[in-house]
Length: 371
Image (cartoon, rainbow, N blue to C red; front, side, top):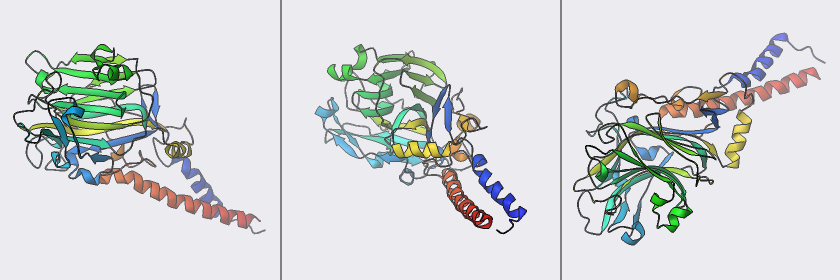
């Protein structure tokens, strides 16, 4: 047996112990008392091309008036999903490169459509494995009457969580948001959830078309809680979805006088500054990834609390909300896409792979020397 140099043993011990201090948030992200293992974060203020961010899929489809349940059908087009980033990458508020509010613009085109289909915009997450979580969108909805702006989670027409804004309802004394859980009861009522107990109209204490605000819903097995700028609006405890799904941002009109009204007389724009989601995955492979990286749940920073938004994201400071994916070590082994900041998490994971190979090599050397 050969003597093992103490320096080599020290190096091996250092690398073998490095795994436990490699990254923060490896066990997940906490909201109140709930732990979520996954995240999705998109900074639309600095995203020049949504097609390069594989978190999101701009939608392209048509729906007939009959299926849209209105006088008009809908025509979702990629061309009506428009990236309008800030002029400077160092700013967090101001006009976009194309003028107007910066962020992802979702258009509903104005005027009566000749083909009976109202042009609209919609984007959905590529991931469809979201099962319980906390989801937040920084948005400014349109003040042009005749559209529905929607931020929602979707599995199917009977398992759906909606926050919807009907611009025709906005006036000097009324600024409502419609909070909806679609359910089998609402399907039986022709998808009118108004009399099912899972529909609430909440009057906001601000004008949603005059500035950006954070809208949020927290979904657990027992309840769905709705928020605006961190203030709890309502809690629903029946018809809670139980299947995995995806997040959608949509801006549309079908001319239904009892809902979206419209079509708008001029182009209407809903603008999104950011989307954040902290959730659990139904995907066994993602669950296995989590169990591998969450080695020491009680370690310092093994879980990271999600910061609460308590003011409207309108100014340069308040609009600069916190993103874990913009930190160097808080999204390791997460599925994140898009910006340079997000890719840092992937780069660190690749670095970890290299470290793992080196650890294995050093361990083999020690084993050989000890024989």
